[in-house]
Image (tube, rainbow over all chains, first blue to last red; front, side, top):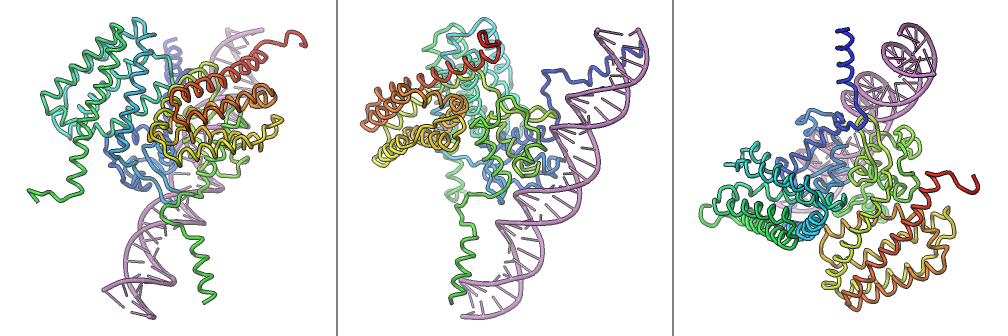
Length: 256
Length: 256
DNA sequence: ACCTCCGAAATGTTCGAACATTTTCCATAT
DNA sequence: ATATGGAAAATGTTCGAACATTTCGGAGGT
């Protein structure tokens, strides 16, 4: 009986339940890993993605790699040219501004709908996500990927919780897309935000008041805070982005 | 000299110019063909996409097929489950309503921006697209794919021309996504629209006044017409969709 | 009659090699 | 020196076979 029970348990743990979607194929794993590295900026914009090189780096064959890259092409994180391979999608100031304008539009719309339709569980999730975000340490350096990853994950989750009750899967999807793309720009400058006491204090305050206004159903105020929060992020990122590209375009005037 | 010139011309026509992106790989061709068939409803919602079967039908190997399907997964036209293959994404009434609500929101927003920023070329394109749409014959039957394809193509192009000047690539992209998905629902009932004199006359009138209001820069009126045009399409499709699924769910009450 | 187990068939996944295209680079001619 | 042509290398693409997983169906037991 003991052996039978053990056997049953074993087969159960190996079996796949109907709603299971962990899907442990190499193609899907490669997709997740590439996506993470793309958004985190580990693979620099414009860089060519040579297949044999990627294959060695990620330890998977070319077939699952191409599958993963194909999905990323549709997500606009990767570009493809027939017979000339894949490259990391470039960043640009125009794209950044377009991204942010729409993020404000869609985000505020989603937030208003969420406020109109959310229940107590939705409110609870927001407060929980806010708490986790506030407890996440700010990264001290560009190299500290673990801390950056954790902060970004909790930040994403907080913003996702705000609009989770809007009952529009497509709207949530589009907000996610924009959020992921914006993260590529933000990752480059997160250390700046973290380095400035003034700035990080302001951002924390914005998150707090945003959660407060949302949970207390003040739609206009919440939407306003969200819009200004996004505008503020754009400001920081754009300022820094300009500085970076300027230094790349022109030779350094003083210390060259 | 004659031979040299001929040779030069030949090599030129075979060579690829820098900005060329026709990309004649099997993977990209399969992607385009599958996408067309998915949107046109040739591959019914929910149907399993067996690889060897598709491979035979489309005359390409499994590798390029998986590439194509992976892209379609990201576009939400196909679903994938690890180790259990691909299926055509299902349709649902909830999805249809979500789709249309957002189509109205984003479409009107894009139209307003387009009206604010468009130039004379943009106006000309709208009038040209409207003309082509009005000259497209309406399909007489469900089987008449050539006519349906042509009408849908011109209809898409007309709506695209309206928002082309909004200067927001992301907004245009999202509108395209929604438009493609909505087309899956509309295709099923286009014959109904075409069959009703009353309905097709009304739709034509809507397109005409929409173009007129847009070109004469009456933003409020144009946005209003567009919203009601989308609502009207939703109505026709939803009514028909309900009828179809009802007849599938319940046995026919009279002639069973 | 129902359930469980197990093997066979079907199907999805991955690899390595073969093939095609693009890119690089060097020899040659102007 | 610069431009041209074309081999050689690098890279992208595709195929067919091998491998893994899932699904189907029947044998055996309760």
